[in-house]
Length: 511
Image (cartoon, rainbow, N blue to C red; front, side):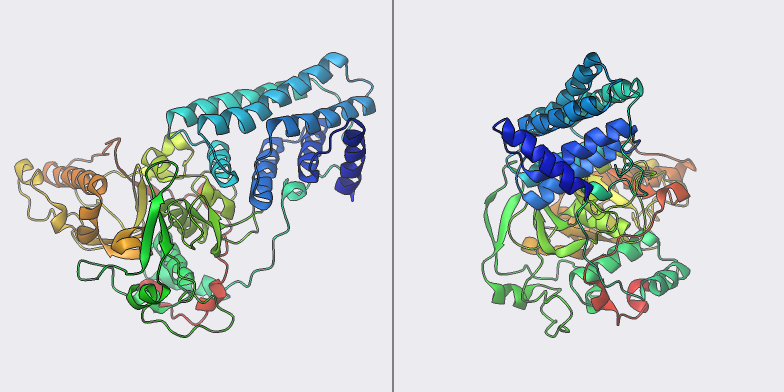
């Protein structure tokens, strides 16, 4: 009710000035100024969520001038309701807000050449979580942090009346800016399957990626399909129609549904889906560069693979980083200490951020140390600029170093001898999307991954030969591992349509 009253009163005020602002913009400004009055510790989180919610729901980019105008009307209203507030304080608050809004809605999108709301959503999500993976994002982190620090410094000097119905003291701190999230049918067997998997020695991250894969294909059988190798033929019926605006990723569309159905390794054996399930055979998920699962900014929002989102094309499908994040989030594995898991954070971290996790806000992930006895483990994340994946299974000698006897032998190790499989969303097999692949057969299609992992194998071999520990720091590729600490655990994020894998046997996830 409060938001409605504020929106109407602000609309009347703005109309009198000859300006009519979108209600969503005015609501965002109203909440931010109210949070200032109440000295709400979650002001920053709520402003980011408000901006991201606007981009998700409105599918347009708000201008800096629109938000600054709305902010000014509410700052003026705040001043009129607080006689102790000096004109100098009013001017300073507005100046601080103007600087912050200009950074987020003018300088940031201009610097990264944002063309649409989805691209800005990805950028603001990255700034929100601390991504410094590019020179410009590193600059924007410092810029926006300085803006928030300046605003906080000004707010601390104020003695204002906090409206009793401000919503600034609610438990989540985000209800006023978060859209309503629909009820999702949760798979009641999830906890049982997870318990069985952990008891069988399956790392949580591996259980998560298998759960995500089965949900994405709405099929228990999808997890049973052997990891793709050189014997699996390319998919037919997927066409490349051009490049994305970054000049790197390809745009893919389904040119022939029947051919995709006949040749996609995860669809060709599927024919019947229960009426309550999503018919993936009729609406295939393929690899979509920049594609993200749909989610709102609410902590209760599910991750939805079946609603198109992200900066990719109109096909259903997600990119590599979205799959890795979804796999972690659905088993309650945070990637940033203390940050509540949200489905919308699948937008936040691109593959490059995982290469240097400590620099980019991924504080729950550490680069691995190879020892004389342990190197690569199932559940590890491997990242290069441009791609990130999870390790699904490892053999007894994942890097093929058992026969090495000297340091010279270590320099001869080849990915042809690797013995592990990976879980990823990739353009492999002409655009398969989410898949399990045999590493030694997949790596020749990614020279950066192949070269980097061979260097890791070299260090693993040295650790064995010299009885020493090494923590490779290549700069071009990193193998990282979840800390597993309590600060890095949270309530899981549910996957939309996961109830469709209700009938899966626990053996599907423990094999």
